[in-house]
Image 1 (spheres, rainbow, N blue to C red):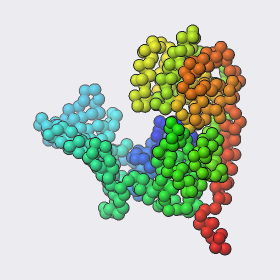
Image 2 (image 1 turned 180 degrees about the horizontal axis):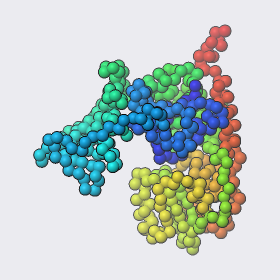
Image 3 (image 1 turned 30 degrees about the vertical axis):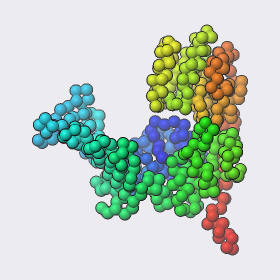
Image 4 (image 1 turned 120 degrees about the horizontal axis):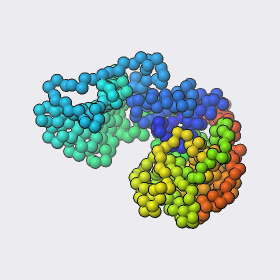
Length: 512
């Protein structure tokens, strides 16, 4: 069996999830490799996310997605996407009036109702938009008007979780999880220490506790031990799951997919250390660049045959673009996170304008760690409000790239730089810092863009000016990054994995 494990599949996602979905879809469609995706985050409405992926074409309808909490609930937590039983599911409505209590509807949001026992505030309810279906309700402690319990409801108004809060620090101290029939299948307990430190996880079946764990990683290891069998091929896209996968008892063929740099200021990140120091349990490290492979081997004794270097790939059939549609603008698409060093981007654009150029800058992304405010502060400082446009994520990045003179990347590090490849695929050249990893293996200097020494803001601004003065007109994706090459790469990888003997198989060979 072929599996992909990941911590989460968020509906709004970046490069890691996008490449995971693309890989699974490619192997399923082109290689007839049926893949089951196992996820470990909690979301009682996960079926909605999967349904959206199927409808948007990101996943084939025959690709199964399973969640650990649904499995713990005996597959009675989530609904199967687009299934008849989900479409016929009953919606549970709740009256907004409670006998003996006085309700007060929020004037700004009709779906929020507060309840009072006389003058004492006792309950807060949030209904799903424009309906009588509960989203959640908070039970208040009278002496402090702080919540002591929150009850959570799924899209149909069914209770799926209760959260309990401390009356001292008001942080979370316990969670109880329920299936669709109201049976408890899991409990978690947390320390009242201001950090919500997890203390204990207990699993229930038929009303009785049967398993307990002190960490989530132990729970995930148990899940993988129960779900996997000897000889299974497992792609792991989340470093959170390295220890559970490599520690579980089944003799599986483990492929660890590195989407990002394993380094931070020259030191190995903590999240990567377990995999790299327990590499004897890894069948293949799937990395995106030879540059990263070489860096890993310079620090750890790992043989060449333990690596598969397979870069991200572009669209199967890149659309034709009309260069006459290109607007007088630069573009940035990506997260507004610290890793992206967007202060460098704004400063480089400011210096570009000081050189006498007027090309605008358009940015698409989602705020992280308050970086959007930092960006806006710099825009205000340099008086660039009329020249820089900031937008949320776009659902059509290729269209935005094709309408731009060049895309810009000033990251401190990258895993591969998926947006670089998408930009070039759209015929839009890229100016990027030459960081680890990806840019130097995607950008062909002077043909599809320019590489700039990391953190050299002045040099970056000069390349912006150069690309305005001397546009790059023959921007095309390198053959090794195209879809057909990726198909062959994954075909070769799966063939290698299929023929790679497990420890158990090797033991029986020796016995003969």
